Image 1 (cartoon, helix red, strand yellow):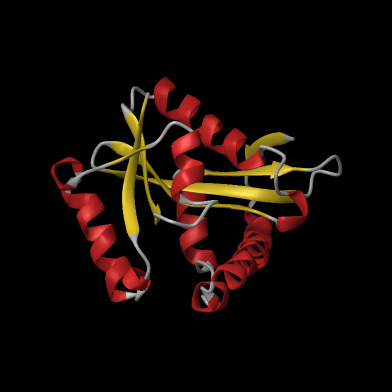
Image 2: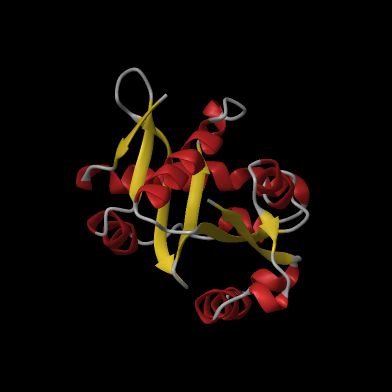
Length: 168
């Protein structure tokens, strides 16, 4: 898979990828997550304009996965990484995370962060295999606290959530 910056006209495709990837949550009793709407095109465009949006593309240069990030607490925060289920289990998500890590390291950013579901196999346990560690309360900065506050307001705390960090 080749990874490249997302083109502006591909932003609606990212929403389609996220919707498709979200369907996996139905199988673990989290239908509300599967039904949650993806980020707005305007939010995706903001990440793109900040140079923090990439896609993994197939041989025809069609996006099959994406990652968007933002600067939070001096680190790069993974806002969303989604892989179309037709392309799952091919290390595409890991490749996108590694691409972000390389980008961060080249910019002297010390770490990647993310928030995720602690007990969903392709969330917390997966990110641990990708080099992320769970942060305790003392390791969570004000930006991550604000993200967690918004997640709680959105109802995501119905399931255990964690903040994670990958040092670079």
